[in-house]
Image (cartoon, rainbow, N blue to C red; front, side, top):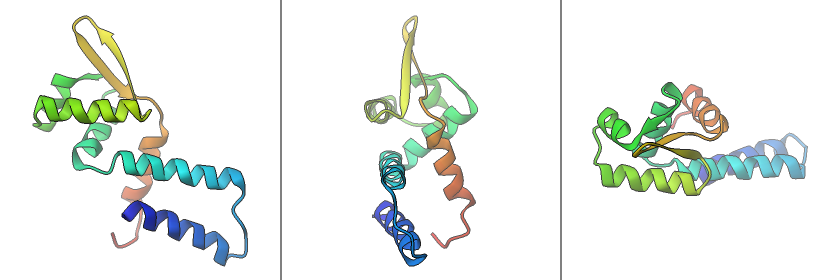
Amino acid sequence: MKVKVIVHILLHMDIEAGTMLNEQEAEKLERIAYILKTVAHPLRLGIVHLLEQHPRLSVSQICQMLGSEQSLTSHHLQNMKLKGLLSVKRDGRSMMYSLKERDVSLIIECLENCQCNM
């Protein structure tokens, strides 16, 4: 719900300023909305935060740092991987996860620094 509100606000800010969004701007907003929808869960946000600090982590490392169950964490990691936010590489018996794009971190950082009343 909040993602739609943010995109709606961004769209109307440009329209009220008398400018129309071009195709590139519209695609950028769609990408931002997609990322926000994908990370819209406290555990997923925690995973992103950890991967910003540690470039490569295994499921067990993430679980230990977040204090989360392995099955639930694996489910969220798989979802984020399928949606293109994470990359994964095998390292022996472990799967090592990393952020695929810096965009995810930048968008979350922007929201964290926002002065709006959320």
